[in-house]
Image (cartoon, rainbow, N blue to C red):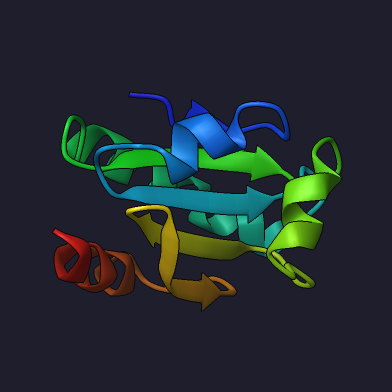
Length: 106
């Protein structure tokens, strides 16, 4: 399953008002570490379908949300539940780190 695509215009409804936890990967096409975690994000989207909304936000195309959340380096992955950021990861990490943080949201 492909990750959800977050944008400046859909972020508040799709991420902050979601009735399930949300993971947002802030990325850009030119970012090497972003490409390293992309397969992990895709796997998580499939493995947690229906339980967690997993998506990506391109910081080059949608800067407002990145600025709102103070994203200065990418990849930055936010873990959101009930409209609040509960945790984050900055940089490329192992899949197990993502799973650990997801399990704390569920």
